[in-house]
Image (cartoon, rainbow, N blue to C red; front, side, top):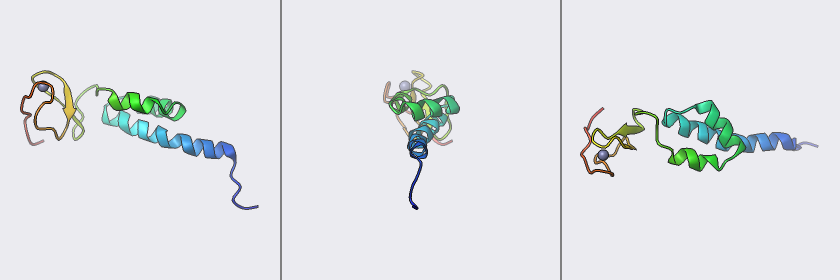
Length: 91
Ligand SMILES: [Zn+2]
């Protein structure tokens, strides 16, 4: 009697997890949150795609752009892993 959950509801719940993660990753990369959220919910394999996607622009606290080679680095990186340029600290 109790404890019966509609299978559609369970599927929706399961899809929400990659959807939420995908949306969060997209937000960190200044990309389309809704689009990536839906894409990752439907096809969780896109989580890998967005994870390895480069950001569109600098996102404070998440990604910075190397002033020398224009590659994107993690915000807390102090040295560019592509050209070994030291990054401006602070901010
Ligand atoms: Zn660099």
